[in-house]
Every structure is written in structure tokens, then in C-alpha cells.
Amino acid sequence: MVAAAAADAPADTVEAAEQATRATFRQILDDAAAQDVASRPYGEIVQWVGEQLLGVPYRAGMLDAPASETLVVDLTAFDCVLYIENVLSLATAIATGETSYQAYTDGVRTLRYRDGALDGYCSRLHYFSDWIRDNERRGTLQNVTQAIGGQPFEKRLTFMGEHRDAYPKLASDSTYACILDMEASLAGTELFYVPQDRISTVYDSLRPGDIIATATSIGGLDVTHTGFVHKTDAHTGFMHASLSSDRVKISDDLQSYVQGISSQVGVVVVRPLDPRG
Image (cartoon, rainbow, N blue to C red; front, side):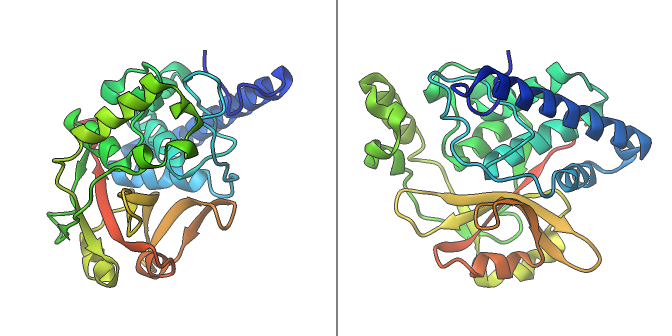
């Protein structure tokens, strides 16, 4: 069963969110069929889907609301990573013609969990670099940061282990131990980023629907925000679920957006791969 955002909310609220999600899902797929979106290059499908969700509210903490790890699928609100996962799953459904609601929710689960399998809190891909690595290994996407001129990003991913009190689910010693093991397994991962003052120099290498993650100077963390390249004749922008604006929006210029937040030192660029081959 698919859970709406807050599993401890009143049953009528949970049911309303699921009904709204199903209605939004069907509307997007119907509009895609009417506009023959499936005939477009995959990156353009991703961008089109992202545009259909502009204005949807930002909401933090959605995955941690249920008492136990549950597949949260909700199109009525997003944080930045949930926006990525839902857009990609919808885009895949449109591209492949696998347009059942079950295929869509399975797509979200596959992106969110290690090896695509939900097996408790520790199976969630908490660090975005781990999310990238696991999905790249399974052929869902390609990290193109180094190929477009990115430079090494020297980081050890230790933030969760060093800030146990900030994560209520880590009160369990066994879960905490699992997170420490996960962090240790990431120690040898090579990371790359495009520094913030060079982002505009790679605009020609970016495609519509490319995933952008903002590399951070915060110790123990890899990235702090995610979204998509929004490419038009007029701009190379950033389409994202914005905490500061409290909604999904498009920032007109990617480099200007990144430079506007001091802790964002650059970007990681990841290309979703066409599931049609």
C-alpha cells in the first residue's frame, strides 16, 4: 500500500492525499498522451514532467513521518529529492508506456532504496552521492560531472553518524550501526563537482532534464539541494522544490542560483538515461 506523506495523520487526510496524488498522476499521463510527449527525447520528457508540477508546495520530513520505513508516494508536496524521484518515475512511465499507477510507485521505490529494495530505514539512499552511485550501477542514470570538466571533490560522508541526535530514527543502536557501516562503505567513492564560478562555462554541455545537485562546504555532507536543468532558448535555469520559496519553481540562471547561497560551492551533474534504450 502506498502511504501519503504523514502516516500518523488522520485517516481522511491520508486518503485525501492519496486520492489527489492518483488524480494528478492520471492528469499528467493524459496530458502527455494528448501532446505526444513520449515521442520526445527523454531529457525533454523529464523537463516536461517537472513543469507540470510547478507551484506544488515544498514540505520537509515526509519520508520520516511514518513510524516505520514506508513507501511514501505523494504528488501534493515535495522536498527536493522527492521531486527528483517522482518526476523521473513519471517520465519513465510516459517514455515506456508502462502507465499503471503501480508501475509509477514501483519506479519511486526503485530510485529511493538500495538495489531498489525497501528493507528498513538503512536501505534508503540517504546521501545523494550514494543515490547517484546506486542508480548509476543499475543503469538508471550517468554521473557526467567529470566528463564535462568537473574537478575532484574531497569529502568524507560522515554527517549522519556525527549528528545522531538530528535523526530520530538513529535512536536505535542497530540502525545507527547500519548507518555507520554505510558511511564507511562510501569512504572510497570518487566525487567530482563543477565549481560555482565555472558553472556557466559548461552550459553547452547540459541537457534539459539533467539532474543538478549542489555541492556543499558543510563538513561531512556532499550536497544540500537537488533539482533539474531547465533549458530553453532564453536560459539555462534550475527547476527545483525550493525551501525558501516554499514551492516548486524555476530559477532563471543556474550559476546565479548556486552563487546566491554561500555554502553551495558548485554542482554535480547527473544525466537520466533513456529507459527505451
